[in-house]
Image 1 (cartoon, rainbow, N blue to C red):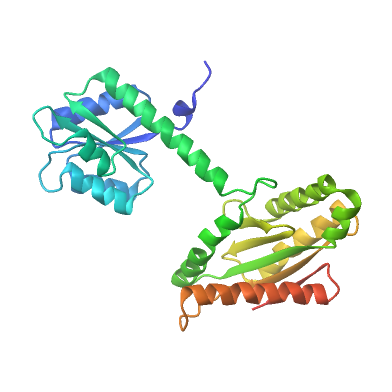
Image 2 (image 1 turned 180 degrees about the vertical axis):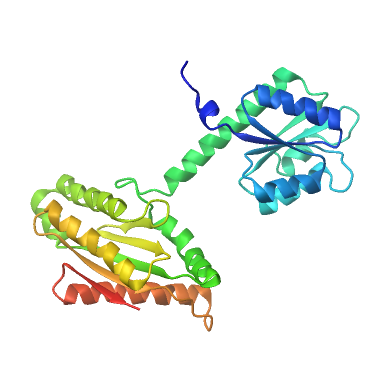
Length: 301
């Protein structure tokens, strides 16, 4: 039998209800629909689960002792923004659909829960969630090369520098510029020029560490790579591989000028000022490579 996506990698649903019978009944029901179900007896238990486990969707009762459903929803909105919430209420409870949705829930369901209604609401919520995640991923990728775009770089760079400082590990940053690209593009046309850019992106991904390093296209013929937990010598070895692989692909007269620098947080200035200083440092190293005859790596630490 052909496996479905939900069978291979089921969505994680957390059921939160202070009534053990309701909690267990919903758990069995949610599990029977093909989802991986976790349970919590109140909002505090739910927060503990969320802190230790990636949860796609929380199905929470609204009336619970201690932290109620709306308070749990507010905490999730603040600290676990990648988790969606459906609020369940009894018929005698006054919380309205509008109130719950305005508070940030993705949907609302009345108790006692109808199986068919729950199945439909979970399917719709998780389908919309996957669609939104897909669109978010696409918005972070360069349309031509399919590596991260400049928007992604602006989102990740400062946080990566701060994380490296906080956890005390080295972080290297390289700016890569394609030499003689305009002449090549003018001579052979945009289609051939695009093949150069696509080829460089492929090489960068092949030569860097999967799920560790991050490759970006800034735009035009300028690229960048972040190398967490790489020393200057390791970073130089990685970008040298990129340079040599590019030469081996033989894109006419095009070569690479690469500026590689060590990212060290300067706490005497603001993060924004420090980020700009590091980027300027890398940019200058790249121009030093160009002024040194191109087709080389200049490392600054």
